[in-house]
Image (cartoon, rainbow, N blue to C red; front, side, top):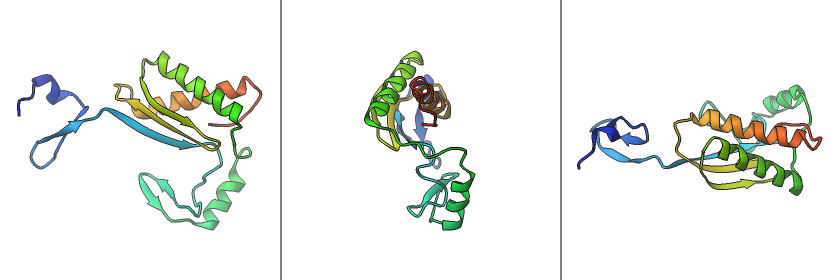
Length: 143
């Protein structure tokens, strides 16, 4: 297989660790997040912490619920539209192509193309855009 030298340095190309074989190019990221307070650590459905899926823990969930600074955020259909439009605008301002976007009452699914922008930064920008758009219509809460 012929690889040009630029591809070998491009982080979008994943190489098998044992043989240096090119496995494929990262085309994008599928990102999912929940709205504030709707899926707490300790939830009986399980939860993810530091990349590990953990089982439910009622004591932890109850502790997290008590520590919440506000009520859980549930998005109405109008609020879902506002958040969706805000994410689309933010992605355009970052020159990030969206392949798919679904804003639900308690979570968001986003598929974006690969970018040099760290994925955590992309998520933070999108969440902030949604939060600020909701604040503009007098709804406080984190998306």
